[in-house]
Every structure is written in C-alpha cells, then in structure tokens.
Length: 108
Image (tube, rainbow, N blue to C red; front, top):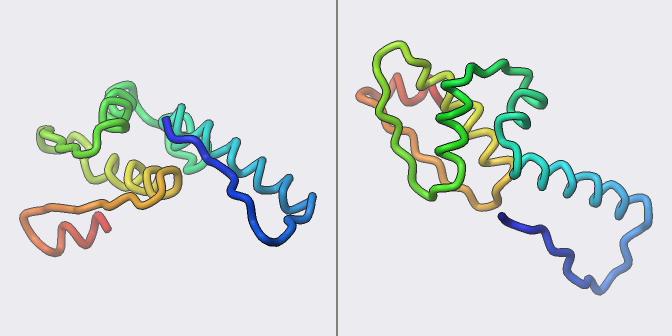
C-alpha cells in the first residue's frame, strides 16, 4: 500500500487548507484500499461480480493484460479502471492497445 507523506515546507499551510488536504488523503487511502467501491461511489457505475473480480485482481500488479471473450465488457471496464488508477496512484502510465487506431481512441 502507498502512504501519503507530508513534507516539511518552508511556508506555513493554513489550518483550513491542511484540513482539506487531510480529507483528500483519507479519500485517496480509502480508494486505494477499496478500488471497486471507489469506482462505484465516485463514478456512479454499478459493477457486476465478474467485473469486481477482474478489477481487484488487476489492481496491484504493475502490468496487466486482460484476455476476455467478445462482448465481455473490456472497453467498458477499462475506462473506470484507468481513471481510478490515474486518480489514486501517482505517476501511473496507461497504454491502450487495440487492433485499430479508432478502437483505441474510442476507449481513450
């Protein structure tokens, strides 16, 4: 698990802003621990059990390849997965591979 560490700054952070940062870090930590709940609550997407299983098994590894059949919802599942990783994990690189450029751009 990745923890957020506050660095000592040469300037003072106002208490109100520090309170906002603390709330934000709590949401990030919760989202990292519960990615499927984060996607359902923040993106308002209802996931099936199979989609939750795929997301949870894909969350921790650095490299992921989904080998799924036709009409199994790969493109639909890839969008919230990529958005959640980009929001919750800093410096995340995401590569979209598809047979055609149009299909990759549609996912993007």
